[in-house]
Length: 302
Image (tube, rainbow, N blue to C red; front, side, top):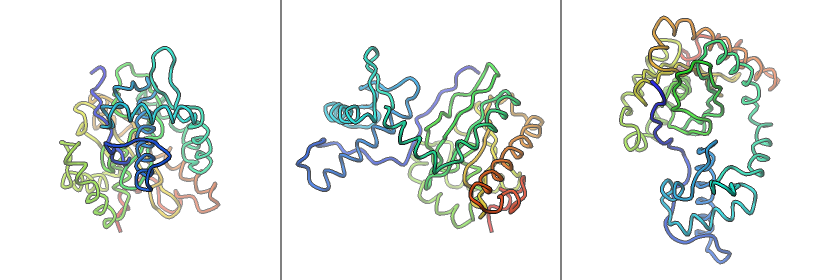
């Protein structure tokens, strides 16, 4: 299949405004606008890793005037949140952002605890393994572990954000929520689905949730990008709510029903181990004891 086309990830970042810039004399509203612009640019640069982002890319993606983008980028470089390569002139996440990420890692321990399991999944299956976490009505990919199979899907990268239900990991997270919350998420994401995800819609995702719960795992049969398939299971906290999702993605020929039957137990085993580690770290009952592995999605709705 080669390298699959990768549509832009749609995230919950601020809507870009088209006038003004960073200045000390801005009103309260203008100051908020400048912060939103800076955050939008920072997130966009982060999603461009590892290649980095050109000024022209950022102007196009953020929908801001070029002088405004340049002004905000210079401020972010001065603070160390961004860095600019002197040769390529591309922008990259800076050292201060790394420090913030390290500090955040002490709170969001699922990332560190999942690393060994993701490596095992990628090594055993040969396919790419992912960790995704919920953020409001969206799922965020925290980590991508490369597999060894030479033909891979490149659709999902670390840092990508999509509405809950998009992709196998996002569907596993959505299906593990109670019915009322599923409906709230679908309603919140309806505009983004209509604008950016032509293969999806509220009715499609609602049906996928039902299928995932009945199957016991989430399956993305190439709905987002044709030929790019994925399977996933949720990682639940002691209260039964989804803290994350583990997924495997591959080209269609590598996720036949027979191979799904081989890979799903691997995902469930790693999810159960991660649930236990998270439960012990929090000092509570391991999630795997509260809800048996393999039935997590099926019991997502009350």
